[in-house]
Amino acid sequence: MFDMIMKDILGTPAILVGLFALIGLLLQKKGVADIIAGTLKTIMGFVIIGAGANVIISSLDIFGKMFNKAFHLSGVIPNNEAIVAVAQNTFGMETALIMVFGMVVNILLARFTRFKYIFLTGHHTMFMACLIGVILSTGGLKGADLVIFGSVLLGLCMVLFPALLQPYVRQITNSDDFAVGHFGSLGYFVAGTIGKYFGNKESSTENIKVPKQLSFLRDTSVAVSLTMTILFVIVALFAGQSFIESKLSGGTNFIVYSLIQAITFAAGVYIVLAGVRILIAEIVPAFKGIADQIVPNAKPALDCPTVFPFAPNAVIIGFIMSFLAGLISMFLLPALGLAVIVPGLVPHFFTGATAGVFGNATGGRRGAILGAFANGLLISFLPALLLPLLGTLGFEKTTFGDSDFGVVGLILGFIMRLF
Amino acid sequence: MRILVVCGNGLGSSFIMELNVKKALAELGKEAVVEHTDLATARTEKADLFIGANDIIHSLDDGTRKIIALDNVMNVGEIKEKLTPYL
Image (cartoon, rainbow over all chains, first blue to last red; front, side, top):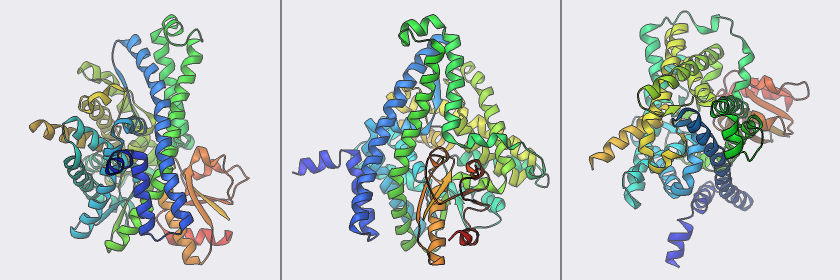
């Protein structure tokens, strides 16, 4: 009986997160129907993430073979959804436990320190929990040590990163109502700082005309499909028709085959996002409800697009500049002996746009341009440096995208080596 | 009445907006089903009202949907003001 509880219930991540959702729903004193629905949906969300992971892996595997044949290098596509989904097979339990107890630590820190931030970007909480779990496990930590150490770390990330950004967020929003809780913070902080010293606040991006046509890339599915299609087709052309049609596609035309593989990757990301959405839809409200009761005057730390409406032009400029830095980095990385990090539209859009908004708030046009460019360099080099620390997970041709994952991973990896 | 709150990823900001819309409805003393999703899925969903940030929500505007564009997604006052005509 005890074995069954320990091994099968707590050892099955899907059941574990369902259990957490159940506790959360009970604490919120929900009705029976809500409790049953919420618990089942949470478990289903977790299972959907696993299903999406399989779709992503099949496509990444083929991309890896093509890339290798074409350039004799390892090409990596940073995508948080992909790496976290893939990691759940091995690190599901660690991720779930660190995530939930990290939220508890976040509430305690907000209650007893001057950092009153409650980190409400649930998917990033999950991604960071996963990264911490992977690095600590790879470094040799296990069991209670791993969960305690990991949760404290995650809780610290959940208050310190928003605190770091808050002076700039006040400038963007002209208020102190909310904070930015998104693990691209380092890029935004660098952008805001560059803007402060090298820019001119008076010449705002919002005084220029910027074509609005690029906003269709805000749709993640479109952005992923488009990037992957361009990427797959270019790599396919270099890998050559004969190789692909004889070794991979079983005779199907190599361009058609590449197109389908690209869209398969996008479909996988879409599935994972749907799973994550269902999963956090139950967990975050419980977290917020409990935090609101325990922490008076708590400040919500929110996803990065909440600052986009404050400077829509900076969003477009930031994305373009960050992406440009990513393209340039793609050629710099192999020269330095690092893996080729293929710039993804999604990480560059979300973090580049946010960096643009930060840079514009402190240093106008020049701040937005330089700040977002710096962000683009960060999210190219940090993922490449992080790769060797992910152990066997590092061979999956994908990695974490945003800057804080890289920073936290590198610092943790360094600490783990000391023991 | 079903209200769908939309953002590019359907994860973070639409979720926060959903909480704010629910708060606005409660303050107005009205009832509605409020859910959040991403742009791609929103195009396939039926709802009485679509709400999102002003920089992306217009891509859903094909003349068949009722749409509310928010300037500040955290401003419950603004949400109340823009919701009221539709309730």
